[in-house]
Length: 104
Image (tube, rainbow, N blue to C red):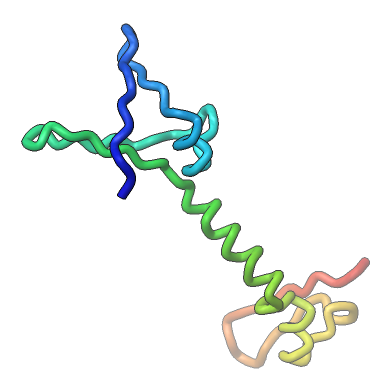
């Protein structure tokens, strides 16, 4: 654990995070930070808020780059569906209809 760093509070209650911390934690202007206060120990903890959709997008991109994803054409081909020919598929007495959008 790194040694504590002293920061000053200005007249509006703001603190400035040193550049090395902003760089290390990828904190940019406009980022949201959460502050957890513990009145018993008189401590504050600061954590950068992370958008869960950004995390999911990064994961999806990594999966795609690793070749672990498949596209609709592959899934349709495996199911015996020709997306270029079939425009709608009705299956027996089931209650579902698949609308296949092929190239127009």
